[in-house]
Length: 124
Image 1 (cartoon, rainbow, N blue to C red):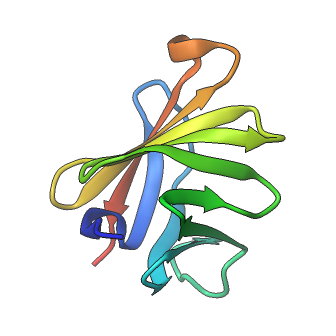
Image 2: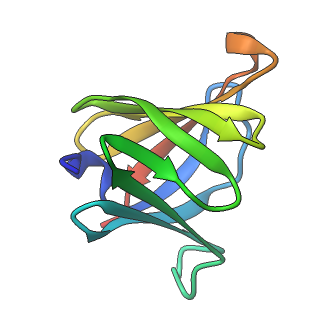
Image 3: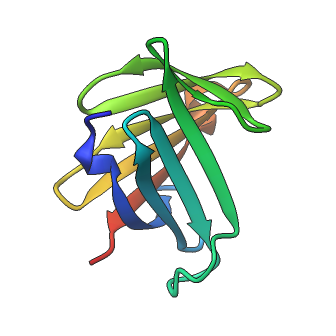
């Protein structure tokens, strides 16, 4: 998994018309094929409140937990996730500038007008 822009600890916030209080997440590799995403209650980053795993297997990147997603497009600058089962949205992680990236959540019913945007800014 060669996406250094995605790895690190980030403060997320709503972008544009998306209203969202700041939130904190860490993206790290457990090994050469497993991405771990930890969510934290606040900027102290003490004890994750949620952890998700994304596993690269047989040319697919999937989220095998309770929410099921599969990466439908993977490039050096973005990953597009579509639903496998039991979810109501897809999402895209897209490279931004040197210190941030953008998450775009797209509800399956509602289209582009219902998209929500989040800027993830790397913490130092």
